[in-house]
Length: 124
Image 1 (cartoon, rainbow, N blue to C red):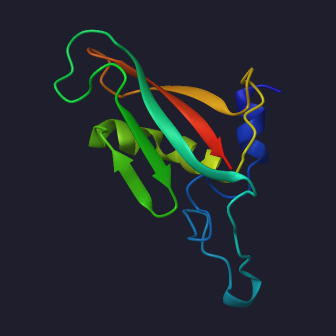
Image 2: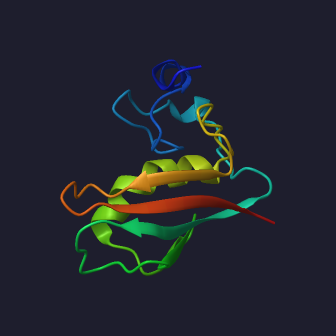
């Protein structure tokens, strides 16, 4: 399955877990409770590589994303761009193009000085 086909299969939008989105909020009586996937407790974010200069991140920096918030050192711009993938991983979404369904890479939005992050599901 290619990425475009997979995205068409998702109901609503990736960030709309229980909050509604541009497609509209579900009716009160029809709203479904969305719970975290069993076994996925958090998503660990680690800096894998830095090309150019980044004044905020260092190689090996880590952060942890849970339903309750973010702990650790992560640039707000990079965090904003990787949150959709991190929340999808919290709910155990399977990205069919990944070799390991529990590990995904993500580049920050600064094309001149890209920082590559590794997102890993923390099970337990």
